[in-house]
Length: 282
Image 1 (tube, one colour):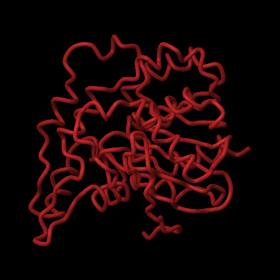
Image 2 (spheres, helix red, strand yellow):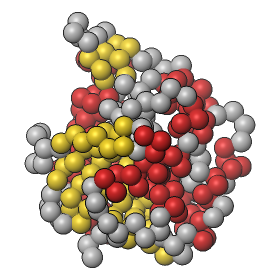
Image 3 (cartoon, helix red, strand yellow):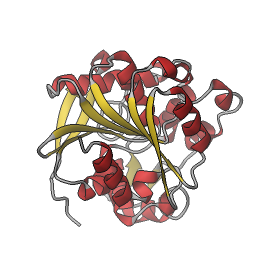
Image 4 (tube, helix red, strand yellow):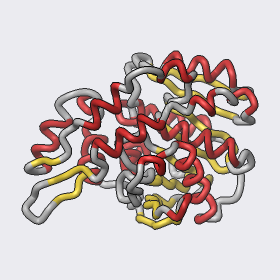
């Protein structure tokens, strides 16, 4: 299904001069930034944008090192607060001013919160979908996710082969078909011979997990002046984190999406769009 609004790619200079690719879906009304989860890219929001009411001017950045954004060569450049600074650079580039609406999923939720901590006036309401913001105790010991993705297959004989391998098992097996299409259409570099490789290899994605968890942000949540809607899935592993965030934030509501795991925007895009429209109605 074609998008009602054809996104335009724009290059923005992010923190430390990193070239960020930002998908500008256009649209009237309130500026809305959509920050994606680790290992995906801005266009993963396509199914959500398709279901949104035409009342937002939507911008979806590719996080540094993912999608079509520049990929720094060293691990230290993938700190999550740097991605927060990148979001502020996007706001500045597009002259969005203050009171901007922002939605962040998983690591993207942490990036939005970091940006709000550094520049409280930038955002009005925000929505954090299973944001990875939690006590450091949760992240002690072996980082199994980083180990797993570091050894992930990155090259495929064809796009069909990539679909067969990636979409046949969790988490992608639980996504709606349109989300799988959006990922495969934009996360793969396709060669002239039809072979494909991931734009964000597993070794680079692993750096994000190694540097993530936003525990320093968790420690100061009670001082963060943030009007937030926290969203989790009925079957999500992050429910406990969301419950702890709810206790610490000053202005907060919580929504639970029935039948969803952690990848709520990819599993339930229409429901996600409805929550966004409802939360930012004013």
